[in-house]
Amino acid sequence: MCQLSTEGTHYGCGHYVVTRTVAKRDCGTKYCMNSRLHMENCPHCPHCLRYYGPDYEQKITLETKTYCSDCEYWFKGPGSKPRK
Image 1 (cartoon, rainbow, N blue to C red):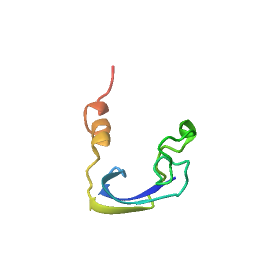
Image 2 (tube, rainbow, N blue to C red):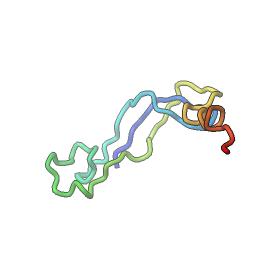
Image 3 (cartoon, rainbow, N blue to C red):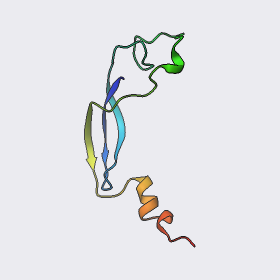
Image 4 (cartoon, rainbow, N blue to C red):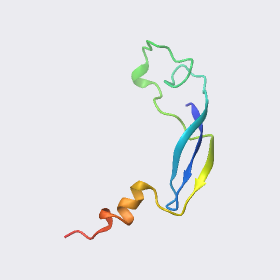
């Protein structure tokens, strides 16, 4: 699996949200769709790796105590209201 080096924001809820991709580390396998060695008309594609692996580097460019937009909805917004 190929991996990325990213920059992003670290929120008070603990989530890290990517704001910029800095670099890509190529895994060098022809069975990874993100690799430079993957063939354009690959006969194995239904079984090829489709996703990146975990980031090999995460640089926090902003750290805030607020919640990310998803957590804001569920913990402080309409999603936090009791249901009938």
